Length: 134
Image (cartoon, rainbow, N blue to C red):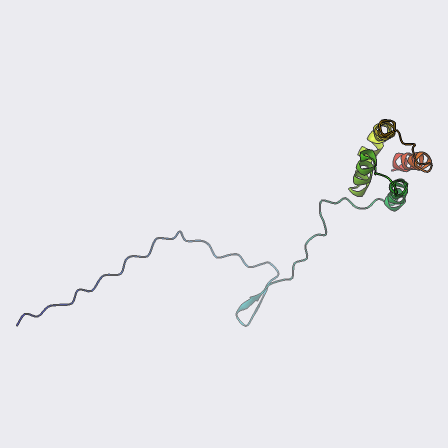
């Protein structure tokens, strides 16, 4: 009788993986029962936002007063621009561009043939005074 030996396939070698160093434990991690305790991490609150200026609230109120003057009409792009600059704390840009923003606003009204709301002029003067102090 002929005895045949079963053919057993040899396992394929595992793909080589570059050895990676074990992650270093956090400095203040404490070993408890063989496991590391992971410290609680609190992200910095909005790191891109500069700290709020003490006069920011007053400035926002003045800008909102200008926006509110257009309650029954289209808010001009110049007013939207001013509002965005103040909301993003771009006080230097407001200070540097306030005259240009005012000119854009006047051109908007001339083009539309619509009178400037009464409260806008004195409020713009207030905004200008506030940003010059900032």
